[in-house]
Length: 137
Image (tube, rainbow, N blue to C red):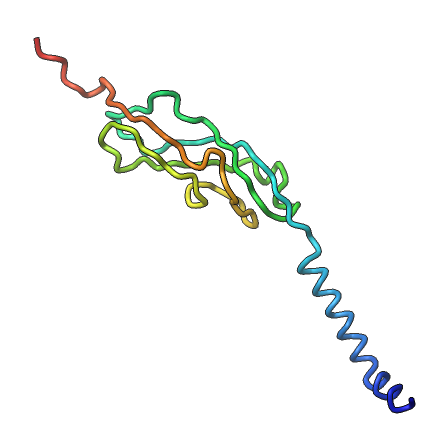
């Protein structure tokens, strides 16, 4: 019995310190729960050619699901989140589909994009009368 007691109490200070360090690391890493929130965010369209226009009421907002720690999912921290669609290079009219991905959403540090509703935006582009020659009689 004394051999077992000696084995348990040998270097007792180091053993207690290592257990306390393990508990501290656990709390630091897993201490803050991860939350999920749904946020309605605006959609902004940039670099639309001057001879094209978005028609048929393009979506002004989408709902996105975000994941992160409770302190980064605060209302103030998410105030500037938006979907930004770059339409550069689109010169012809027609219908285009743009997926809503992490690449076109502005997110603060520590916030992860999960999904969006709708998952893609369907836009219809049409020519404007600006810059077009008048019809010939």
